[in-house]
Image (cartoon, rainbow, N blue to C red; front, side, top):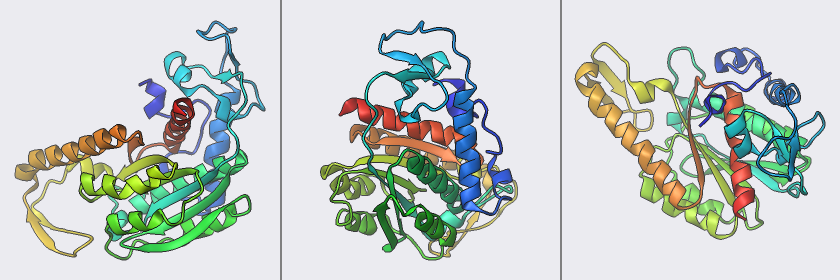
Length: 306
C-alpha cells in the first residue's frame, strides 16, 4: 500500500474531520473535499508515458476520474488514464447504519455517524459529478428511510444524511435481508457501519444483495479509541445499544480488548474478501480524501473483475 493510500492525497485541503465538523453544511463539505481531491489530480506531475501499458496516458484536467488506473497510481504515485471507454453510468446507493452505537465519539473527533455522513455526502457528490444516479437507505434494526437512486436525488440524499440520528439499538441482519427487495436493479452499494454483529451473520445477510448482481463496497467505521482503548482510569463503560453499565479496569483489560477487536476486524476483512466484497476499515480521525482514494480503488477493482 502506498503512503498516499492511507494519508492525504496531493492538493486536497480541509479534509481533517475535526475541521470539517465546523463547516456545518454537507453540500459545501462534500464539494470542498471532492473538488480538492480532483484538483490534486490536476496538479499531479507527469514525466512522459513511461508506464507498463501502452493503453495508458497521463491524466490531464477535464479527464473523467473514473478512468484513472488506481492500481497503477499505488505503484507509481502518478495518475494515468486508461485509454478505453469509461464505465457506463450506474446506480449508486449509500447504505448507512444509524444504530445507537454509531453515536460514539472520543477525543474531539466527529461521531461515527457524523463521519459516515461526511463520507456519504462526499461519495454521493463524486458519483453525481460522474453522472451516476444516487440514492440512500438508512437502517438500525429495521429500514428507517429510503431514497431510491435518481439523477435528481442528490439534494434528498444530503437531506437524509443531515437528518440522520443514531437513537435506537441496531441489528444488521434483519434490515440487510430486507434490502434485497429494494435493489433488484444492478448497481453499486456502499455499506457504512461499525459492524457490531457476528461476521458470519453479517455475511449471510449480505449474500442476497450480491446474488442479484450488485457491487458491494464496505466501509467499517470505528472511533480511534474503539481500536486503541487508551483509557487510564477504572470506570463503568456503557453499552450504547443496551444501556448496560460494565465496570472495567482499562490497564488489565486493554490487551484482551485490543486482541478481540483486531480479531473481529481481521475476520470481517477475510470473509468479505472471500465473497469478493471490497472492505476498508477506517477511523473517524482519518482524512476523508484517503477514503475517496479507497472508494475509487474499489471501483477500479470491481470494473476489472467483471
